[in-house]
Image 1 (cartoon, rainbow, N blue to C red):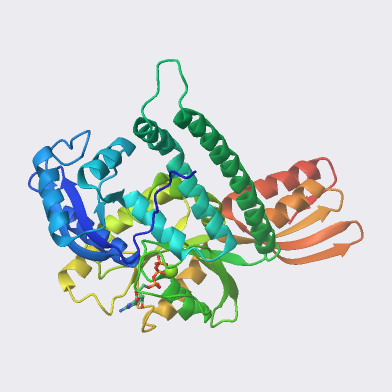
Image 2 (image 1 turned 90 degrees about the horizontal axis):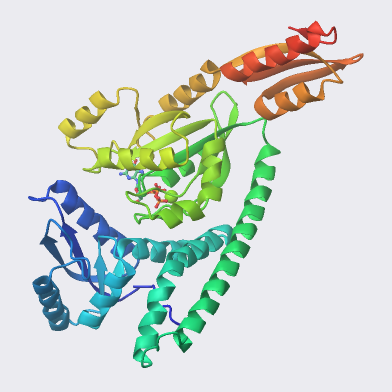
Length: 434
Ligand SMILES: Nc1nc2c(ncn2[C@@H]2O[C@H](COP(=O)(O)OP(=O)(O)OP(=O)(O)O)[C@@H](O)[C@H]2O)c(=O)[nH]1
Ligand SMILES: [Mg+2]
């Protein structure tokens, strides 16, 4: 795949560009451009300036209108830019047309995010997942890259297959093979991780989720003492790390840190990180960490909920955690958020404020939703015993003659199921409930 252009914008001189389709554009548009700037800075680009256009319908060939492309061209030449980064998603044809018109590298927000993920990936699994996302992103674009090349080579006759076309087929096959290999390898790594976590299944699991830069890793560090990477950059954490969080009562739970979310997260990335995010769907409680000092905290909450919906996690036990309250000097904004989300817990992961309330709330949720049940189960009832160890937290298990005496913590629904399973057996004269 020689036709790949270099993705990285590290130390390149960049112009940020965006199109606002709403007239007049609102604060959210401006905040989106600010976010693009933070993303570009995180990727290491040197931002020279930005250019926006209000246009109800983006141009299908070049996104910007003709006049605006000319203006951008003149601007890029006068300040000697290396790359233009668009906030809007570009079609492969738009990228090609803009690159031809500007004689510059052009990338969109999704590519920029892929670039950041590629440079931040540390673990083998994160690296494989990023590679998968990049390949999935490039596969539909290969056609355009090779058609482009064939034209340069003099075009292809009707019914005749040019070198570009043959190469395209080969590249597609190579890319598809690579994609399925990567998927297999990622699934194997994830299965290994899940086995490790299941081995500790008697523990409760809590996952930290939230918009990128909300302070998840800072909270992880504060609660578990783990030495995790914290920085004022987007997407610092790309893989799940699990550490033990010990309550003041001595009780222990497993706490996982995860990759941050962002609005319009490129679909390829969500799909590629599915394995990592699966841990989120298996957690008993999700702590949704929110940076209340961000002006667009509500949009961030909605974006996180959109990803949770995609992961089918919205019906999970989710606690909202307002973080960075030490920074929230806009009382009005904070009280508006508190009115809207009265159940949220306010903390500062940095200073430690609110850790006791957070611990108490998690603790009461753990027990509030759980039931302690005692059962007498015949050793032959393998199905029920397997169900108990999968769904419950076994507190004690004692074999008396041919029956296990078990005390187990179970959620409401599982408690009903287990009692029914045990009653079915006892009606056959082989088991007894409580
Ligand atoms: N003032 C203040 N800063 C905080 C607080 N919590 C986190 N930060 C800062 O916010 C920035 C991001 O923190 P991280 O913990 O890396 O955020 P994250 O959610 O893990 O971010 P990603 O992994 O990049 O998605 C860092 O500069 C932290 O020092 C807080 O309670 N108060
Ligand atoms: Mg982090």
